[in-house]
Length: 400
Image (cartoon, rainbow, N blue to C red; front, side, top):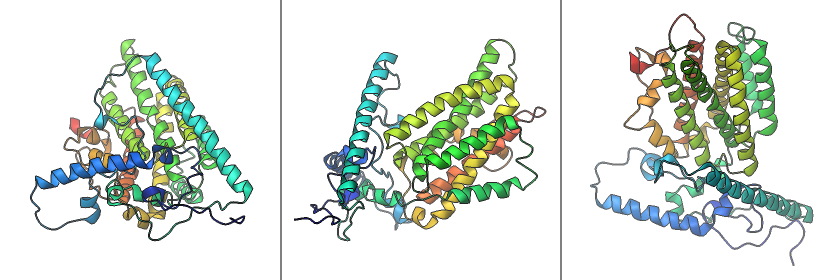
C-alpha cells in the first residue's frame, strides 16, 4: 500500500520523459501529448539520415566543437506539427474557412487537454501525492533521443529570469541622458502597463514563454509600418519612404526567426500562452496603425522603447543563465538563419552598420543564440532611432 506523500511507483522511462508520472501531464503542455513512440520514430529516421550522410563523406581532422558536430541539426522535440517554412511542401494555403476550422479544432482539443491536465494536477496535489518529479541518475536518454536533443528538455526548464534584474538594467539605462524623460507620455503610459503585465503573467520560471510572447508581438510594428507606408503610397500621399519598407520587412523576418527559435524551445507549448500571444498581437497591430495615423514619430518611439526593453531582458537572461546556456546546443532553426549562405535579409535591417563590417555570427550553443538575439534587438533600437530622424533618410548596408 502506498502511503500519502510517497512518490508513485513508476516504470522507468527515458529521454525527456525521465521520471515523470504517466498520470500527471504538464498544464497545457504538448510534450507528453506527442508520445514517446512518435519521438522514437522521428529519432530513428534522423539516425538513419545521419548514418547515410556520414557514409558518403570522409572524416577529416578532429572535432572542433563537441556541440557543433554532435548536434548539428538539433531538435528539442517541442516544434508543433504544423512545422516551419524550412520543411514546407507547399507555400500556398487553403481557403480561410478551411484554415479557420482546422485551427479551431486543434486549439479546442488543446484547451480540453489543458483543463483535463489541470484537473489531474489538482487531484494529485489534493490527495497528498508527491508533486515534484523524481529522477534516477541511470535514467539517461537513448542514443536516438540524444540525436534529437530530447534529453535537454529538462535542462530548458531550469532556465530562469529575474524581473528585478531587468528593472535595474532599465533604471541604469534611463540615467544616461534622461532617456525616459524625453519620451512622450502617449507612449510611456502603455509601455509601463505592458511591462507590468509581462512581469505578472510570466514569472521567474517561465522565460522562454515570456520570450515567445514578446517575439509574437514584436513582429507587429514592422507589419504595421509596411501597411501604413503602402496605404500612403496607394493614396498618393507619400512615396519617399518606399525603400524603408524593405528595412521593415527584414526586421519582421528577423523577429519571425526569433519566434521560431522560441517555439523550438517550447515557448508556445501551452494553450493559454498561444491564446494570449495571438490575440495580443492582433490588438497591438491595430493600435499601432492608429498611433501611426496620429504620429509616425511616436510609433517609432514606442517601438524603440520596447526594443530597448527586449535588449535589457535578453541581457539579463544571458548573464543569469550563462553556464547552462553554454552547455546546450543551438536549435536547428537558429543555425539555418544565422549561418545561411544568403544573409541579405540579415544585413538589411542593421542600418547602423552602413559603411562598417557585417555581422557574421557563429552559432554553436544556446548562449550564442540568445547573445545574437540580444544583439539583433539592439540593432532594431538603432533603426527605430534612425526612423525618428526626419532630416536624414534611413539606409540599409545593402544600399551603400
